[in-house]
Length: 251
Length: 258
Image (cartoon, rainbow over all chains, first blue to last red; front, top):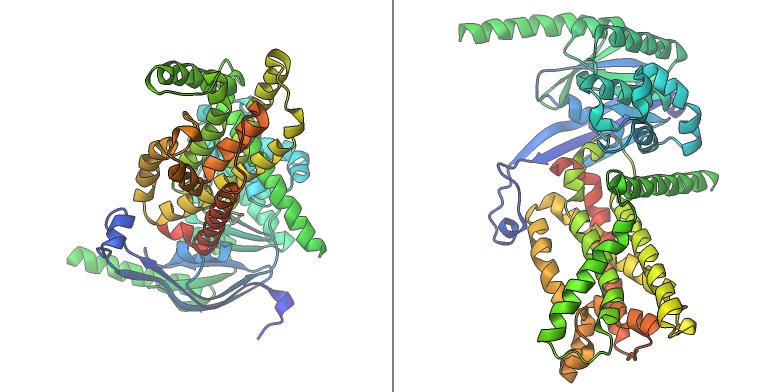
C-alpha cells in the first residue's frame, strides 16, 4: 500500500454499467413500460493506483473499456459503484476540438475552453501568447471558429489544454493526430512533461508510441484488468492480436 | 475554507464568461445588434395589440402599453426554457470535454436572457417616465424582486427539463407543445378581470400569473390582489426545488446518455 501523498489516481472497486438503447429513449416509453433494461458492463470492479509521475499506457481491444476508464478518471463520467480519487490538477484530452463555438473568434473560444479546464481568467490572459504560438494559427486567432480547418481547431484545443498546466494529463488515442510538424511539437512537449514529473495516462493502439512515451502498461479486456507491468505486456498483446487476426482470416 | 472560496470564484468566473459568450454570440452576425432586444417584443406588441383589440373585449385603456411589459417577461421565460431544454444534448461536446459545473451551461442562457430582459424593461420604464409621465416610481422597488423571481422560476424549469431531456428525448417535444398553451394560460394578452372570479383565483397556480400582475402593478400602476400571489410563490419554490433536485441526481450521469 502506497502512501496517499505519492498517488495521483486511485480507483477502488469501480464499476461502470451502461444501459443499452437501440433507439432514442423517450419518457412515453418509460411511462408505458416499454423500456428495455439491457445492460452493458463497461468496467467491472477495477482497482487501480497510479503513482505521481507515472506514464501509464492503456491497451486492450475495441470495447474493452479504455475510453470509459479515461472518462471515469477525468470525472466526465461517474461510476455506478466504487470510488475515484485524484490528487492534482487533471486535464483530459479525450475529444480535442470539443467545446469550440463556431460563431466566436479563436480568442473568445480560448477563454471559454480554458475556463472549462479550470483555469482562471487571469491565467488564461497571461498564457494567451504561448497558446497562440504553440497552436501556430497566426492571424486566424481573431477570426470566427467556422473559418478554421480541422487541423487548426485540433492544434488550438491542444495548446489550451497544455497551457492549463496539468499535473495529471489524460490522453485518448484520437488526439494523436495532426500533421507531421505538429506531432513532433506535441511529442517534444510530452517529453518535457516527462521530465517535469507530471502523471500521464494515455490510450493508444499504436504500440510503438506507447513504448516510446510510457513507463508502465495497463491491459484491459472486457472491463477487467488483465495485466499490469512493463513493455513485456506489449509483446504479449501483439502476439495475441496477431493470433486473433490469423484466426479471423482463417474463419 | 480558502479552497472553498477559490472554487466559488472559479464557478462565478466560468458562469460570467459563458454568459458573455451567450450574449455576444447571438448578436455577432446581426447588423442591428442589440436593437433586436427591443425590436422583437415591439413587433409582437404591434401585431397582438392590433388583432386582440378587435376580437376580445379588452377593458384596458391603452392596450399596447398593457401588452408590452407582459410580453417582455413572457419572452424571457419561454425563450429561455425552450432553448435550454435540449441544451445538454446539443452541447454534448462540452460535456464530454471536461469535468466542470454542468449547471453553468443552462444558467448562462438564463443570465444572458435576464440581461436582455432587464435592458428592455429599463427602456420601457424610462419611456413610461418620460413620455407617458404617469409615474409610479415608488412601486419600482418591486422590479428587482420580480426579475429575481422570474429568474429563479426560469432557472428551475430549465434545470428540470434539460436534465430530463438527456434521459428522455421526447421531453423537448413536450415542452415545445406546452409553451403556446402556457402562453394562453397566462394573462399576457388579457387581464384577470375578464375571467370569472373562481378562475381568476386558480390561475395563480401558474406562477407566471403573479409575475404579470406584479409587473403591471409596478410599471403601469394597475391594481393587484396580493394574497393569491402567495400561491404563485409557493408553486415557484416547488418547481425550483424539483429542478435542482433532478439536476443534482442526473447531472453526474449526463455522459452516459448523450
